[in-house]
Length: 313
Image 1 (cartoon, rainbow, N blue to C red):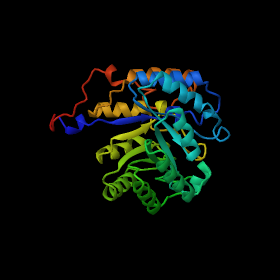
Image 2 (image 1 turned 30 degrees about the vertical axis):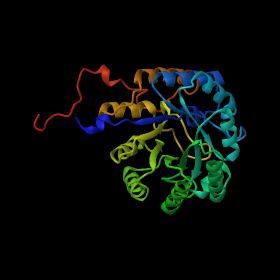
Image 3 (image 1 turned 60 degrees about the horizontal axis):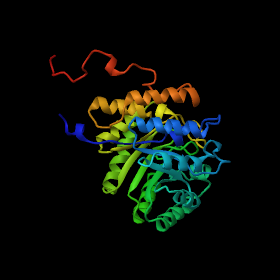
Image 4 (image 1 turned 120 degrees about the vertical axis):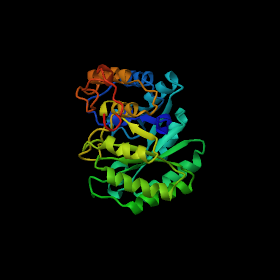
């Protein structure tokens, strides 16, 4: 058996934040908590539960404080992440008890301005202050538009490297590469990962891929083959960025888990339970899910063993 079968994959569920933020109708807080509970029962151990942003910018997440309080009370063993765009957001979630944050900067200056209304210089300064003021905060830098921007097209590899270097200098060692509008292709992903792993061999690189062009899993497979073991996905393939025109849903949690299970990786996540969670989402959030597995039969329903056959058979 290949040694990859013993590699543990770390999946962070981002549905309650990225998945919900684009939903137009109001999702009641109790429904969000119900879905979070079902995800935990499926085996999810890390989750981005909300974002500390202005309710005017994203009304769907206006209940972020309530969600944080409920989750920390009801599910103390969950590793709860919150996305924050600035120092004010970091202070609020820290006071609420959150100790894991995702701080977002877009590689594209234009998207950074549209998304969080900040220049690169302002975002970098905010990153440094948060790191200094909250040394016990687990800090992940989420880099948006790594693979392309809805406003300027191709983004700068030089800026990407510069942002990672500045994060590294202040002790941030977890970086998530985000394909915000789902335009990455496997060759591009390979090129970027090769460069980053050579330049920053000690940084924990994660991937957050959208599936606009149907290549999210293909890009994640490139990541797996390059030693990446941390991925962010959304139940049902929900998601999209309000400030990134044309973005479709995230890589679906159940689709990634299904692929990993078939390849022999360990996830400890139950696909049947994820599909039960899908039914709740269809009822209360979005009736038309984008994931492949939400529409397909499970492998266990077929009477075959899909092992590779020896040559000649």
